[in-house]
Image 1: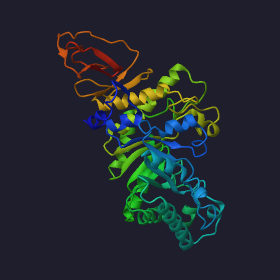
Image 2: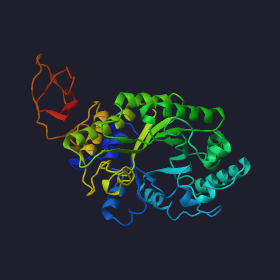
Image 3: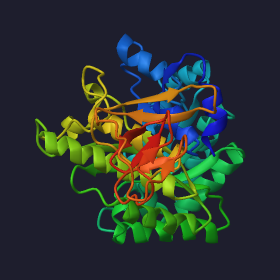
Image 4: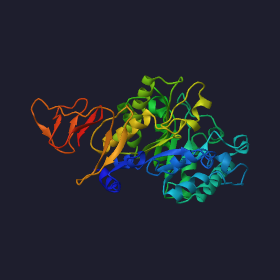
Length: 417
C-alpha cells in the first residue's frame, strides 16, 4: 500500500492531522501543490505559514514571476527578482517546484508580440529566452510548462505572434530548445478546458502528436482545471480524458485547479456540490496511473484571480479569505485518504483527517460528525481490525470484531477502528 512508508513517519503524537500533500503521497501521487502569489507571500504571514507547510503543500509554482514579461522585459535583458521568490521558498522548505511558463501568447512584452519577425529571427529569440530562463533554474524544476494555451476555445490554433510566424512549427522549436537547456526536467504542454473532451481536447491531442512526430521531447500535459461548480465533468469522464493523453506516452497532471461559484454567496448545497466537484477531479487523477499530481491555482479565496476575471463569481479555492478550511478541503482530503486506505470515498461534510496510531500498523482515517455504527450484517459476520464495514454499495459485514467499532469516514467508506 502506498501509504505505509509515509504513515510510519507520521507516528510521533497519538493523533496527528494528516494534511493534503501527505495524503496525496500516501495515495500514490507525487505531490499536492499550489500556485504562490509573489506579491503576497512575503507580506501576509498567515498566507506564508500555509505556503511553508510542506505537509499540506508539497509543491509550489510561481503565479507570474517566471513569465516572459517578468523574466525578459526587453530583448536580451533578463531579470529574476520576481521569478526567484517562489523557487527560493521551495528550496528552503524542501518542496517540489513546477516552473511556469516559457512560450505563451499572453503576458508577452511588447517587443515580442509586436515585433516584425522572420522565422530565423524569432527562432533565435525563442531559443535565447528558453536557454537563459531554464538555465537560470536548471536542476530546480520538476517540470516546465513549455508551451501554454496554444489552442483556442473553439478548437482552432490560437492566434499569436508565434503561430503567424511559424504555423505549428513553433511547438517543436520550443520543446527542442527546452530539452537542450535542461535535459532532466519534465517538459509539459499546458491548457484549460481540456477536461470537457471536446474539439479543444482533440486539438491538444493533435499538438502532442505534432511535437512527437517532429522528434521533439514532450513529457507531460497539464490540465489547468479552471472549472465551474455544477458543470464539472464526472470522475469517470475526467479519467477518460486523462487517458487520451497517457495513451500517447506522456504523463498528466492538474496544474491550475480552481472550481468557482457562478454567483455569491454560495448556498450550502452549492458548497456541497463544489466539494463533490473537487473530489471528482482529484479522484480522476488517482484513477489514472499516469497522473502524477494536483496543483491548485492558489489555496485561499483571499488571493484568487477569479473575482477580477469572472464578474460575480468566486470562492473557488479550498480555504476561505480568512484561511479557514472549507468543505471542499474536506472532500479532497477524504478522497485522498480513502484511496490511501483502499476505499473510493469522498465526504462533503466538514471532517478532520487524522492519522491514528496504535501498537499495530497505522492507517489514515477520516473522522466526521457522522455517528459511529455497530450494526451487524444479516449474516452475523464481523469484520476484522482495519477492514471495511460500510459505505454506499457495500454488501459485506457491517459489524466489527471487539473491541473495534465501525467508524464512518465518508458516505462511501467506513472502517473498523
